[in-house]
Length: 132
Image (tube, rainbow, N blue to C red):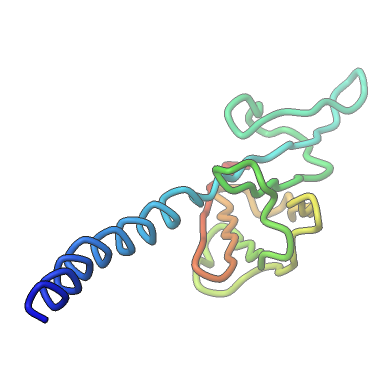
């Protein structure tokens, strides 16, 4: 009887941390990555830029947001909130990522400055700033 009780106690001591470690590893494995393909009109036609190489004052025609988990899976169905410069509390536009984890919008070019895009899905979220 003592040995059985002792075995059960040892099993609990080792299985509970293993379970907790598994849960933590699962959460860590699903980090969110956001990127943007920014289409802008140039003298020679339309060109696609990233947030890092977008020229100042570019005449943007559309912005495609891409949300992916660190596993490579798209964040399909995630909620998108877009905040215009100067209004960080009320979304300028809302939407949902498609099956490929993509959402396209056209910003109001009269509102130049930092736009914030926030993507959320149960237990996961990410944001990015785009200076337009």
